[in-house]
Length: 412
Image 1 (spheres, rainbow, N blue to C red):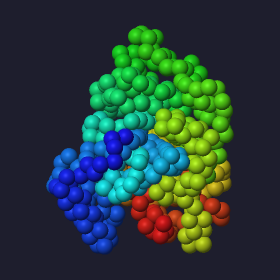
Image 2: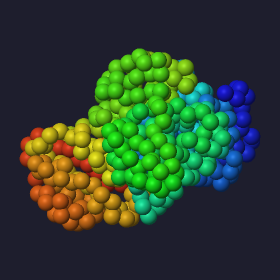
Image 3: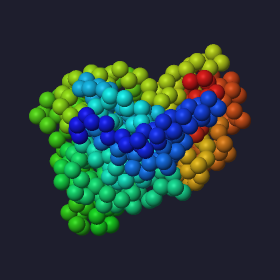
Image 4: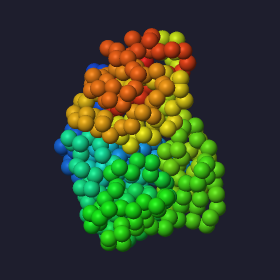
């Protein structure tokens, strides 16, 4: 950590004040948290503000296609065992949102920052992180984000020679290739349920061989590294071979994997696995994800799934048939306007569930479900869909802006 002197110049302090004022005005006008517009204004006034705000913090950056918001929250809870934490807990993960979060840092010792995949290298340059967690890479927002191998290449180039300790998922070949340019990597066997973006070798383009949980390229020799941390059932195995129980209120295998990576990150800062994992139990929901809410006299569990990998993981944790399921898909700017990814999702996994479809792109989703031979009904809005669902808790799965729409409707 860089000492306790105030790193903010008069210009930087003015930028912070202006950013907070604009954010407050945005909130008062009912236009959201104001973090993004506040950060943009602050950075306009002082382009070096993010670096200045990070100067006195031990920073952790978390990046991935899926799970970065949850993992950021788990790491933040773990590190609070060692000192005050500032974090962009609500997921504003581009430079403006990150700047807003750090501007409210008060006396924080640690900065736990979720970073959009496209911005990781730049944010790493600005914040000089002590640790970077890389969880996974898969197709997402195809009209906005680069193809996955290009993202991996950007990570690899941006992190080359980084002083940060990189905690990386050994089971994702794209992540391994990206992280391998860093001199100090801690490998975690966190698993990889979705494999359809990693069948070709990111190093040479050859066909990846995948015997069991292992993987390797038969042409260039690029292969899975030996992990020092691992998810094993309901336990995290540390580098000494000790098994630490995972007790989470968050559901599913994916969140156990997030906890394993989070424990490895916490250890970099001296927080023992037992302490880190115990603190993670306090997390019940993350920005509305996994919340169970009451709406029209029914229990709805809200689940976010933004891309094929995310939908696959989500299908694995919903209650079994005949639990009703509501699916909602939009294609606004924050979602990506290209809905072709719907064809990569295996909707046959919903067989036996009564399915209701809503959202801006409900007809796109309806065509996909029709081809998958699923029984479903299409509705104009959530109220109609809930009224049509048979008894029992309803699983509601939505992509990004559809999820925000649903949260507003149910008052969450």
